[in-house]
Amino acid sequence: MPALPVIDVFSYSGGIVGPSVPMLGPVADGGTIRTGTPPGCWGPMITPKFQGGHEVTQPVAVEGAEVGDAVAIKIRKMQVTSLATASGVMEFVEGRYRGDPFVAKLCPVCGTMSPPSHVEGIGDEAIHCDVCGSEVNAFRVSNGYVIVLDREAGVSLTVSKAVAETLAGEASTFSALPELAQQHSVLTLAHADIAGLAAHMQPFLGNIGTTPSADLPDSHNAGDFGSFLIDAPHTYALTAEALAAAKTDGHMDTNSVREGAVLICPVKVKGAGIYMGDMHAQQGNGEIAGHATDVSGETEVEVEVIKGLGIDGPILLQRPDDLPPMARPMTGAQKAAVKALGARYGQMEVEENGPITFIGSAANLNDATRNGLERAAAITGLPYDEILNRATITGSIEISRLPGVVRVTFLCPMPILERLGIAHLVRAQYGL
Image 1 (cartoon, rainbow, N blue to C red):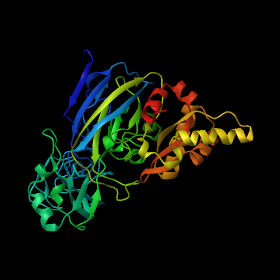
Image 2 (tube, rainbow, N blue to C red):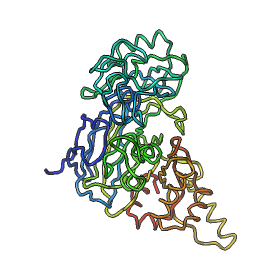
Image 3 (cartoon, helix red, strand yellow):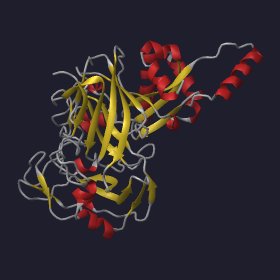
Image 4 (cartoon, one colour):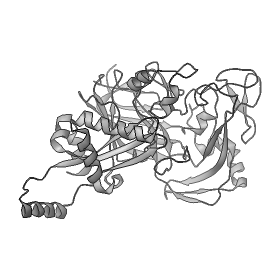
């Protein structure tokens, strides 16, 4: 098919990302993808037929994207459409899953794997198996809340039990589930352990990127959640080596992957297969509760193929205001002061550079940090120990998600960025 300048996506992959999921498109190199996404984690988690923890968009092929290339995803617009959502700290219900409750849910009474289900009433016990009628939710909330949202003002507020139960009665309306979404709304649970807590809104996408080279549950396309697939007792089990080769680290829960950022992703299948989902209304670094405020939302991105940039995981060009302080480009006055300082000591050369962030993921934070550092060294060609020094004095290591996704940020020499074919993106992003 001829490449299209704009593709609208309002269909979803059913919880799986990988080669078996048909792609839309292709969209033209330089073209635009517009999507409407349903909430991530909790809705699919309490919907037993989902074999992934999210409900992401059907992937879109990109014109000219071949294995070994990369695709820059420039996030132009992002807005929340839900009026309310709910979240909290999760617990598993034993006997209702095989190995992994995100992937292999089962009915404890009739034994049906990934059974179809429906909602009866509200609360933890509202999800029932269509086959036998038994209550079938594999998750419980140990401390939870319902939160109402004002996207125009950029604020939100947790509500009382009475308000939560009222919202649960019209869950689909307040969650603004897209027409083709298949999840049960998390508002059904109606937990209200925290009421009257105001919070800022700062929406971002928790799961965005390119299609992995093997079928994976969408929430497990990362090194930490993906580690649960290693030798697992279900259909999507992989070896550690196969997981490392296949994943693209789309599920990174990095709160700076928001409007104005540029995400550069590996191409591991022909066409790249860009997908999006798991919008959060807000989240602090680390997502320490395990889950944040998953919402429906609309996103518009522009794509650009970068030939031959054989990266293993994402590179992020954060918004200038999201950069760690040590990585922010210097002002004109600071550059003049640096030049004068060098002249005072006979150091006439001053490096031209730009900020760059490598995403690292693994089963734990230490290994994820090493993964990010090793990716940076492999792609830039700089010695590993030099990356350590640069990240120390011109950058930072930041936690995106526990247990194992991090950001490795540092100032990279511009000639290296030119060689990689991304200097134009860095210059545009930071006004260099």
